[in-house]
Length: 316
Image (tube, rainbow, N blue to C red; front, top):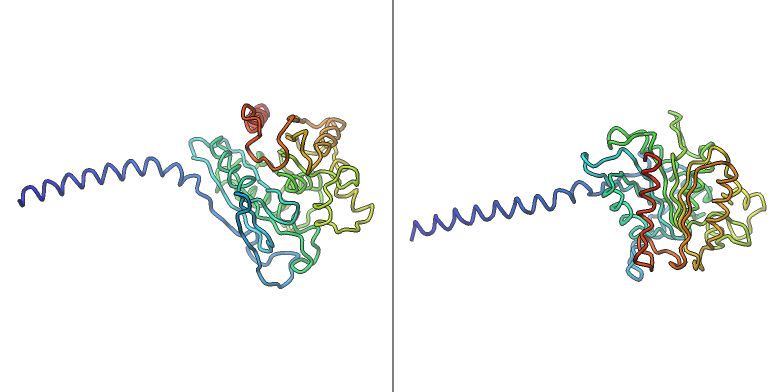
């Protein structure tokens, strides 16, 4: 009986070691992609008022949304070292400047980038709110600029090339990303090292671009610059009017049947890029609606593959 017991024990230990090895082989790649969340600001948050943290996360129709954000963070997703290209993308999920769609326009996108060898940094940016910010209209841009600054200054730590840092945005996050890509000459954060705040490229997915009455997304406009903005403010935040020859190369995706953010937003931005001789590529799909994330209704189309090809063609 004793011999049988010890034989069984040795067999069980062998099986357990094999199981542990199998688990390690399957889990290790996931651990490499596991996110680290850091605060966007080490000390005090600029442009903020003392207020209660009322942030709330919930699932809405299967989509993770975060509301009432007053404490911004950066979630870091890194590819394996052997797969890393040195490229980084700062991701701004959408939500009309009222929420942040942190799942399908944030974490899911980041994980896809790590599979491509690209480091991804998802910004949980502040929602404009007069109760939590001194100047609500610059709060999201501060957070986007701070994210670019952090990635560039921490490039070695994350195995990133500081000259290959792009920005990506969905819907209102596309407005934020395009604002970062057209307003970078004006810093709205403390930047003592004069770190470049210019993204090296932009990826804009069904983006809000214009605040013009004719094609603008009024919800995003109202939430960012108020319900009765001046004509000057509308022009300032209509990013198709802010494009110049220094605007970063841009990749755009939109659906023709988008009834939330008109496809003309992408079209006018694309036309402005061409006018200023900025490299640009745009994909307009017949169907897709708004907020499709990675998954277009047409299962045969994968816009992320088009995006990957565009990035590769530019050396990113």
